[in-house]
Image (cartoon, rainbow, N blue to C red; front, side, top):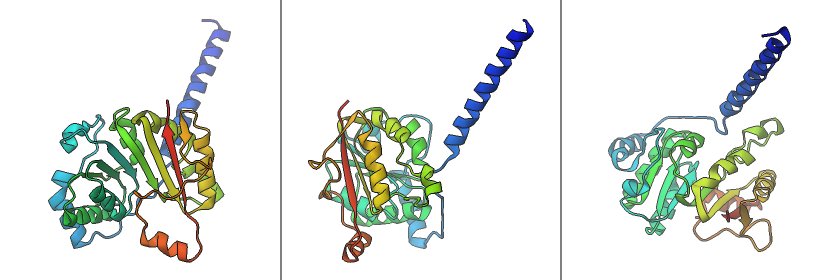
Length: 248
């Protein structure tokens, strides 16, 4: 090998290392901060009693939703369900659908399971893990009828906007998981984030806006009105819903 060839090879190797490091850095950026807090006795009891039937452990293998739920009903995936009250209400009101909720906050998972158990909900499963990894490794392609993301962390400081979960790469990775005709439903009470979401979704060529106005949609009946949201309405705060359908 000549000195010139060796130099070129070294440059290619260095470029590859730089790209690999960039990819690792990007993958390390989290859209959430894991705040465990204190688990109440009710929450811990719910996890101990109900996890075997309603909890799903993380694994790098696709889920079989028919086996998980015992039927072939449409599957709704919600990321970041908080304390889970609205998710439990949706599952209770739509027994013809299956719901999978992913949340990194342990007490929230416990609270959701407690409410689901008390309500007698059977069409709900929960996970306590990073949703991006679950989406990548565990959700089969074209297996979801609806993807829900309600009131995600807005990371309102400009220098933190890169941590927002709604980014072009995230939408592109989520797209194949939705069936054709499946819907992305997002909601936020931060106008700047709503504008960001709309911009990202409008640029996603495989989706069309369900809103007749071409921007935001009225809150659909299936998304419960939370106490937090009701209080915001009374104070004059806005909430923006976005509904986009996968067309290809």
